[in-house]
Length: 102
Image 1: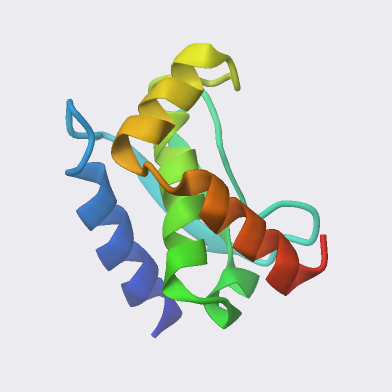
Image 2: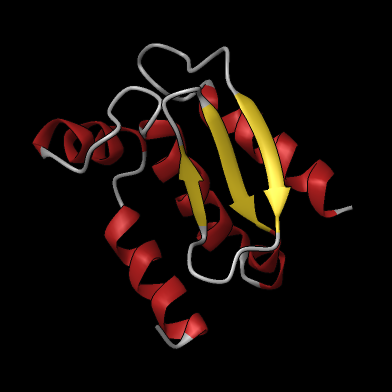
């Protein structure tokens, strides 16, 4: 069930970018230290723990990692694109932090 939700939401959000995000791989794994990551091989890995959180928190992590397909860093251009796709990303990030206690 979890993987279907993540794949569905990832596909939805990939289409919301000014240039749709394509040609990436998705993995769901148990991750203790991160909610997700994206590497230079265009592999997005998401923590299976996220399934316990509201969809808005899941969406935030997915959009964050999709943004890394274009920018592998956390510079200004990364945050400009993140803001364009998900204007309330900071609110979602705060909510995720509150729920997770981090």
